[in-house]
Image (cartoon, rainbow, N blue to C red; front, side):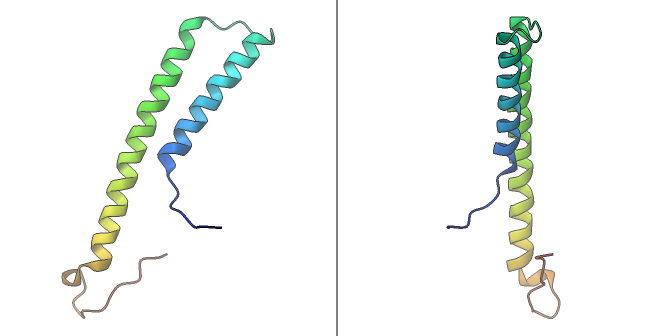
Amino acid sequence: MLRHDVQPGRLVAGAFLTATAVIYAGDAGALWETPWFVIVPVVVGGLCLAGAVGVLTRAVRRRRRTLRTDPATDPDGTRADLTG
């Protein structure tokens, strides 16, 4: 199996869209009554939050990559191990 980077923004977007599906399914199954306009802020808010998480993730990864490859950050000239 190929390895890939985890993308938290897509995880957040998927969680909000799954919540939207659950809201619609509950309304269709007559478990509760959902007004039509409730879905708009859930989807838009989820996509905006996912975008913010994606931007934050990219900034953190870019900063980590810069710290790993920049010899000026380590006075010995050796690479610091930031893998955790």
